[in-house]
Each structure stands twice: as structure tokens, then as C-alpha cells.
Length: 435
Image 1 (cartoon, helix red, strand yellow):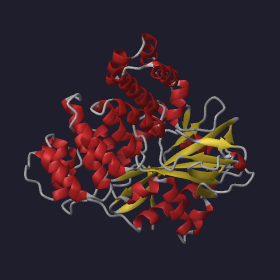
Image 2 (cartoon, one colour; image 1 turned 180 degrees about the horizontal axis):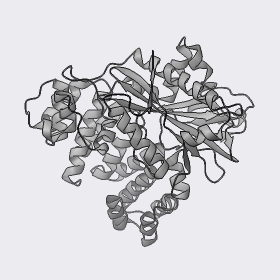
Image 3 (cartoon, helix red, strand yellow; image 1 turned 90 degrees about the vertical axis):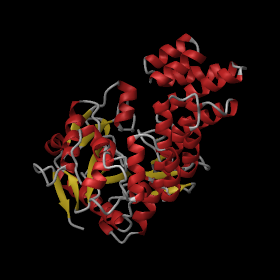
Image 4 (cartoon, helix red, strand yellow; image 1 turned 60 degrees about the vertical axis):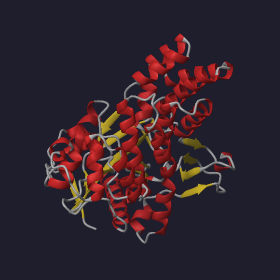
């Protein structure tokens, strides 16, 4: 936020800076687009485009943000903030080779501060690991690693701890080389995004890959809870369809079409049969948590009920924050009391979780040393619930948000993280799934 304000103050009118300070990202983006169209100075325009890219990121519009950052680099190829933003967008979009290249370029930009350059360097290596190019990550880190976390990642990839003091300095090194799991909860949350988890979760995070995996499986129970879906472009019927990016987060880019014939012929992403899901007059969904440990797979009995705001269909908490400042959420405990068919709903969620765990088991390679058990991996599973209580799996999220935004989801997420990292199934939070 601070770096965005600095850029904006240097390149835009006071009104745009005020919009950013108020976190009014859409109006700020609109104003910046107008300012860019009037700007003839390439240096100033590059800064404005970088600010626009950051606003698009805040709106969870990575494809549009990527265009803005690319435009900024076209005006000023040495602008580190634009290179960093570009690399991070590419990484979230799953374009890992290009992301690694962009982040490496950012790490060499002298206008970024040392922390930003170190972060870019580490993130570039993480993209290589996620892309199954560990040798490239090792060569890069051997040249650039200067922080404890970067040196720890290099040690893990080499499967050799040359500096034992890293065990005390880095949670990653501690997990990998001593099997100690003591760390603050936020460190455990950050660990859920480590690049060293099984790469299958990266593939299933891609909605088109997920649809192909479900369709190609022999799991009738999983297929029964997956809505009809098609990779676009595809001829769609007159029914209602939801179109979503193949990769995305925060509900960005999700569009409901009343008829498949309204979807543009050149549209990209995944089209999924719309599951009408109304509760208390609003669209709603369920976020469940699947926990994969080396010794077993579990479904959390704790989860979040999420409501759309402003009459929309996007129930993602990030969209609710953008629209209303705080998400409107309930717990699974509330849902079990409110829904007469909760037993049906839970069984559908359980079938989906079991099916996804079986898909993941087929390909669970991870860049993790044999010196210690792998850390747990928490996966987000999103569901819509129809009028008879059947839950339909909408997508799999490899890095669900695990830091609460309000009281309900904070309590749920804290309990899920604690249970995932616990040595046993604590307090009835987790139900074991037998594969």
C-alpha cells in the first residue's frame, strides 16, 4: 500500500491519490485510465500504468493488471515496480516460465529497495520449483541467495544443510531438517504457500485441468458432484452458465450468463453450469478445507458459509470486502442448524473431498527432502448448494486465504490451521478420509 501511494503521488493527480488512500480501487483505476490517455511524458505514463496495474491487482483482475504492467515496461523498461508486478501476475496466472523471467528482471532493478529485490529473487526460484525446474532454481539461488529463507530453500533443494544455524532462523529449514514444527500461526499460514508442496495441487488449481481430471477419473461419486463444465471456446446451450478464468483468485473475472448463447465466441476460461444457490434471498456458497498430511487426508468439520453482496453471484470474501468492507459469513455450525438437508450437503462435500484426494494421490511428487515428513497442505474447496441440499464442487484452491477478515472466518481459519499442524486429530475438527 505504501509503495503504491509513493508511485501515485509521483505520477497522478491529488484526487487519484485520495481514491487510493480510501481503497476505492475501481474509481482510482478509472481515473488512472483517463490520466494515461492524456499523458505524453513516457516516464510519468509508466508510473501511472504501474499504479493502474496495482489497482487492478487489488480488484483481483490479474489479466488486466498484466496489460498495465506490460504497458509501463514499454514506456520504461527499467521500472522495477512494474517488473515485480508483472512477475507476480504471471505467477498467479500459472505462466511460470515467464513469471520467473520477469521476477529475475525485477530482482536486478536498482530502483527497488533491497527487501523487494530479495523477495523477487526468492519468488523467481519458487516459480521454477513449481514448474518442476529445480535445477534452474538451484543455479539461481546459488548466485543470489542472501536472506535466511532463500538460503533455506537452496538447502532444501540440494537436500543438504551446510549452515545448521538456519534451523533457528528459518521455519522452512526447521521443518525440513529437524522435523520441528514450532512457529507462530502466521508462519504456518505462510508455509501453506511454499513451492515445495506436491505439484499436483498447482495443476488442480487450474479449473480446466481440474475439469479434465474429474472427467477422466473413474470416480462416479466425484463426477456426480461436479457441474457440467466446458473449456472455452465451446458451444453452450440456452441454460445459465458461469464463466470464470482458468486461474484466478478473489472471485475476479467470474461472470454469470443467463444463456450460454450470450457467451462471446472467443471467450476463454471455464464455463460451468450455473447451480442456483439461494439462502435468505441471496446467493451463497460453502468454503470447506481439505488437509493433506503425509500420513493421511482429512476434511475439516469447520468451514465458512459465504454470502454474495449487492445482489451479485460472487460469494468470495474478497469480493464482499471490495463491495462492503467486510465479508458476510457464517460457520458450518450455523449451516447445520439452518439447513434441513445438511446431512445430504455434508455427504456431497465428503464425496468431493475424497475424490479430489484420490486424484492428488496419483501424482504427489514434491521437492521435499527425505530428512523430515512433509508439512501439511491445506486446500480450499468451494461448493454451491442446490434446492434439495446437494453440494456441487465449483473449484479447488491450492492457497486459500487463511487469515481471517472478520470474527467468523477468523475463528474457523485459526482452528483449521491449528488442527492441520497438530500431531493428531484434535477436538473433532478433522474427519479422516480413507482412500
